[in-house]
Length: 186
Image 1: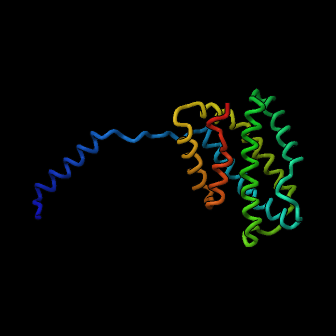
Image 2: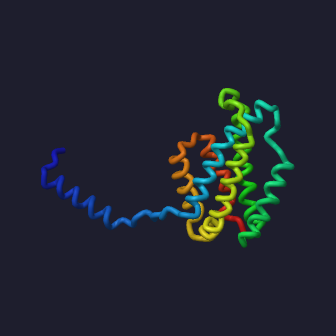
Image 3: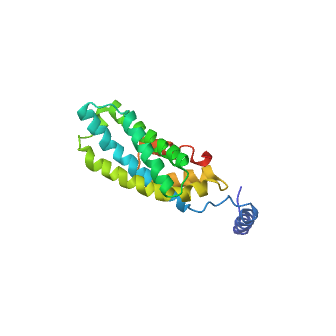
């Protein structure tokens, strides 16, 4: 079948008109609340590599229930001081901790990926600083979570953060876990 120049032009015009008439896919505007939380969560997860290396060197377990309880109590206090619902903040931070443990368990299961041991004190200082920033970003994210298309906007924010921080599959999975049920937190 041979097409003439006129036929090709007509087909191109028809395709353009069809595309213009077709309903556009919904455009999701980058979300500042979710975007900031995704960025900070990614930074927090990258520190899990150093925590895993330290735990490998010291033989300490990934689970540290006492430290987690202390951290969640601290989060509740800080949330209340910021007029944030303490239990919502604790639920969100529990997801952050679970995501961090997910990375640690995987890295400890793969000795080649565990990294060199480090002093945990500076890492914990960084984690504390990120946690404070997460608490500042959380009100915006909680407000955004009540909006339409929450899961899609949360996914888009995670995808942008994963790309920016060049997260591998493990850390991308953990980032999804770090968001937890943010779109469903009461």
